[in-house]
Structures are given as structure tokens and as C-alpha cells.
Length: 406
Image 1 (cartoon, helix red, strand yellow):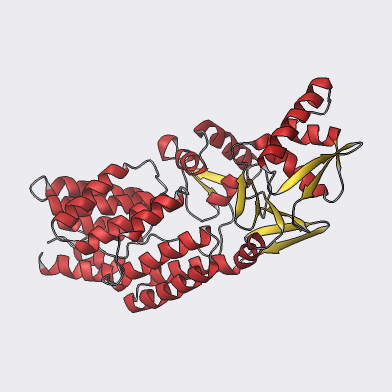
Image 2 (tube, rainbow, N blue to C red):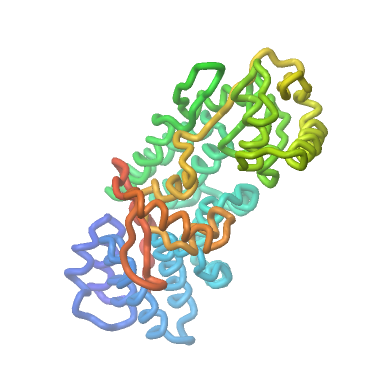
């Protein structure tokens, strides 16, 4: 590595992409192309950055497997920041194996963090935890240490473990300040905001109030019977009955919980569960079948008792029934929740993250655009979607371990 390339790499490590570009902007050798790509990515032009990093990988050629692997890692992180979740994960795994084989532990650790962040983004927490468990954080650089703790905090928050999340964010902040990278410090501050802002709504009888994450944690750990409309489950303490794949049953239990301790008329249950205004005998027969299925699934937590006009929810060993609802119960609230991170998403990435078909997601995006809630840019495969009102902090590209090409 010559002096200018080394100086550009040091500038990137210090969070100065403009300083890096000043040194390598006019050069077309492989190392300079890679550093230019990373610098431009940090400045926000992700499409141009990917082109440059790919050119760098081709320029290095098969005789430089270590440098090519570093380019693959850089392109994977750019793809993750661009919410291109269809990017081939096997290429990243192969690059990580190459880096480990050549003894480049720091960039190999960075590649593993990218794999974990991808799994975290699409909700595969178990796989993310297993991948993270094999990585020792003590030997990491300050920038990678901050990235590691951000991932730990992200998993803890999704597991509703706020104390470990607070501790991980505190460690991430200390590491980010030691690294002295402004974008990394902002990333940690943005993550910390999640613990300070409302995460859901509590509906109990006539009460409707927002809850922060630690309050949600306390609620689900209590002896209250919770109808979790965020994850479509019925829970009390450690006992959880998932109805995520049973939308009719969840619609029934949600209607019963909203009315508790009163009963719900059969016509109301039919309208909410089957989405019909005119009930006939076939609907009433189907209602009896679905109520029987619901009883069988939640029998350890509650009973569903017939009344003269309908059904009532009767919790077992619980004095209260509460509904934990999303902050917005818009028909397309899940799509809006993902777009709320401030990044631009493709419809295919949203479909992968939501576990839905791309056509379903596209219909939701079209409806939200017609309502003036989201906007798109680009055409065809380059089309990306964002919310009209971005949050106070956006998640910047986290290239916390600039790749060195020697």
C-alpha cells in the first residue's frame, strides 16, 4: 500500500470520507477504487459505491483472494444499508471464511457482524444469537466493539430485555467515543432513542396509553393476561400461545379482550373475524367451530364461555386482561414500521422482512402512497420507498472497520 492509499484508509478510519476522497479520487487502481467506494457509501451514494467496490473486486482479480474478500464484505454492508436483502449471503459467508483463513480477524469479525445484522433485520433472532455467540468481543477494535454491542442491544430489545440492552448501549457508547467516528456515535445515540420512546399501546378497559419498552417488558412478565396484537399472541408470564398463523382466531380473541369483562355479540364476532356484514347460519356454524379451536389453544390461559347473546373471555388465575397494541393500527402499519427506520427499502426487501408476498407488499405501498404517507424514487428494480416524514435520527451506514488493502 502506498502512502496516499494508507492516508485515505486512515481518514476513513477516523470518519473523514471527504479526506479519503481528496487522496484517491482521481485514481483507478484496485485499492483506490475500493476506498473510494467506501467513502462514497459513507456520504450516502450507495448505488455509486456498489459500482466502485465491484470494480475494485474485479481489478484485484483471482490472484488476490484476501483483497477480493474485503471488497465482498464492503459490498455486503452497502447492500445492507440500501436494504437490499436479496444480496447473496453465501458470498458473504465465503468471504468471511477467506478472511479467517488468511488471519484477517478484524474484517472476518466485521463480516460476521454483518451476517448477524441481516438476520436481526429479518427477525431471525435465534440464528443471530447463535452466530454472535461464537465471536469474542474482547479483542475487537473500538469501532467493531461498538458495532458488536449495537447488535447485542438490538437482540436484547427484540427479546424485551431492557436491562441487558441498556448495558450493551452503554458499552457501545464508550467504544464509539474511543473510536471517535461521528457516524458511529450517531448510530449509538439513535439506537438509544428506542428505549426512550413509546413502543406500543396498552388498552385496558377504557384506558389507552403509550408504553415504553421497559413498561412492555414489565407488562408481559406480570400475571396479567396479555393479548399481544404486536406479535399476535396470547401470553401470561412465560406461557405464550402464538396465533400469528391463525388470523381468524386472533381476531376473535382480540374482540373478546377489547370488550372484557363484558361479552361480545355473535354478530360482532362474525363481522370482525370473517369480515362480513350479513351473517347467516353458515357463519354462525363457522363461528362455533373457530371458538372451539380457540378454546383448545388457550385452555391453559383462559376459557371462552358462551352467553345468551355471544361469548365472553374468562382468564384463568389472572385478574386483568390487557391488550398490547401497536402504536398505529393502520391496515399497513407493519410496512410503515419498517420504513420508519429512515432508510429506503425496495418492495422485495420489505416482503422478505415481513414474510409476505411481494405483490401484497406492493399493494400496501401503493395504498400508503395514495394516502400521502410514503414516497418512492427510482424505477424498476432501482425503485425505493421511504416515509415522507423521517424520524429525528436516521441510521447511517456503519462502516466501522474500514477495509485496508495491502
